[in-house]
Image (cartoon, each protein chain N blue to C red):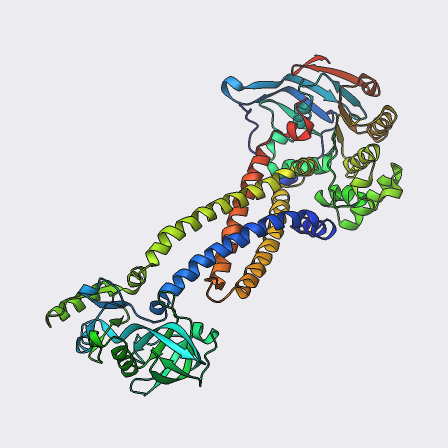
Length: 245
Length: 381
């Protein structure tokens, strides 16, 4: 059963700036139950966490421990069965579907395990798409995309299609796309799972650089202890519950 | 909408194989649907075209004819009386006899139709020339089916192997019992009919059926019993039915509908289900992309518009290709094959496929929205 979060707010409320001392990400008593009745499974149970400005937090745990389910709630992709999330001071549960979309577009950057880039768009167009969805003018989105791709050493690949890129390059494009709108929160779901150790470290370093260097917050879900070492804190998730905070 | 249109346009331009692959499958299904519907439609049109070619509300049969045009014999004086029944606007007579047409030494089977000009019995669509008027000697009009067989306005043809007449017009196809029709004034019809079946005593005094137009605002269902009652007073038992009912009673029409129609319907159900399934699969294939766009904050409208626009492109390609294929096939087969494509058939098939794809796409989209985002992110880890 979902908690009562009061009346839903309009789309533009997603842009309301966060309060001064509040952490970028605040989760309290999160629970997510999948299915109903006898087949119901609690994927995440009573998870609370805070991520401050400039902090990168790693969430580690075995496969099936609820990491992706937790990330979906933290990223306003799914609504908790119980508990609440605040992202930059905004509770996604108080927003309508369109408002949650705007919140994700402007405040959250996602990096997924298998980045699903649009296959018929070039690398530059793929990255710029995030800006266009967030409401940027085409020219501005493309300029920012080009800048980010250069920073990620992908300037020679801007006109290529995703199929022509290596796994590491794809992940860097996904990172560029996640950072395009300068989000306050970056959520990464196993971003190194398909990469070799060196390339994995490079991607995570870039993520850490963004969160620390630009005063943003990041949550990195991984099952790789070496990757988690880059983070400022590590949280262990098992059977949907946090073991260490 | 702008972003959705741009995405679909770029996909169609840069990777056309993907929409084309789906469109090819749908083209096969659409062509099959078009051919089957057209076969059924053409068979029915060629069986009942005679009655569809006139503009009447009611048909008067003599009771013993049991609604069969070829068997009906209503005396001409009785049909004149029908014109005085309350609610009747106009009445005409139509008589049909199986005959032959000989042209350039070639003999073709046909139906000879005797009709009153400028009455509800006159064919409504004249394609070329004119229709004969009552009393004109030795002239006829032919329908489009005979025109396709090479008979033109100004040609001379022989009816029933004995009476030479001149063709003065071509009317729209009005085949009856799968035979083309020749439209003649009543006296020309009576002479040919009398020669063909002298034992039946054909004469101008006997006609086949009466065709009645009711006055504007009158209900044909209320006028019909009045006609029956009026003719009963003259000791004539008749059956008066709506034109649509008379069309359904044409021999073979119901058999075509029931047997062939059932098979076509079954095939169409399969085609609709497969088309909807194809659309659903197309949406399902974009599951990962949908997850990524959703994570980027794409509004639900953008996701729906992108998926449905993409299906729209596939539909447009498939219906266009299927239309061209079916039209080419219809032009290539011999005229005897009942495959005459009508715009209404094309439109109905296009709408049917659009609905099937729309429903399949909508179901796919609903399923996609119902998927747990954690699963879309790459597992429930």
